[in-house]
Length: 241
Image (cartoon, rainbow, N blue to C red; front, side):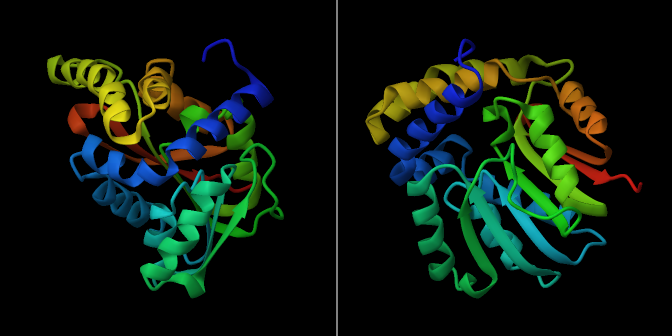
């Protein structure tokens, strides 16, 4: 994956997630021990603190973040955006099943060129998606553009801690070893579930992600970590002009 850049990387990621879309929720629950829903709820609470208005979930996948946003009284409307049509089709069915469809729309689009006007959104969430972006600084700049001053961005991601302890290293080793096996067994796609731990291995450490958010115009106002420090929520507030 390290050799793929720009359009090639986007297309590769889209194909990978299209292939695993039907088993994506099952594998997420198994790999996180069922905790990913609680992490999303925590991220939404942090993102919506002091906010009210429309929300955007980027790399929405099967729509779990969009569902959590739509359940919040402060959210007037939520759009889930993704480049992978099979994921979006599942997300549309999910919001109907969860009884939040009237507040949620889904749109195929690219995080590097968001189809929204400047300064119109109260909050943005990204769950386990930013490590797949070929040009993260550009994507973060787009998020800052479409957020209103004081609006919030919440990123939930698997990151490298600044200093990892024994349990974190053990967790990562297990993730690299077990994930391809689970993918082959349950999704019948070893390549896709080899890519996922590889994308984590290539990704940033905690402070590097916070620094990129700062360069894009966000002040990091909250941080939380889970799973021995391997999963993090970073919340950035868009600086006023």
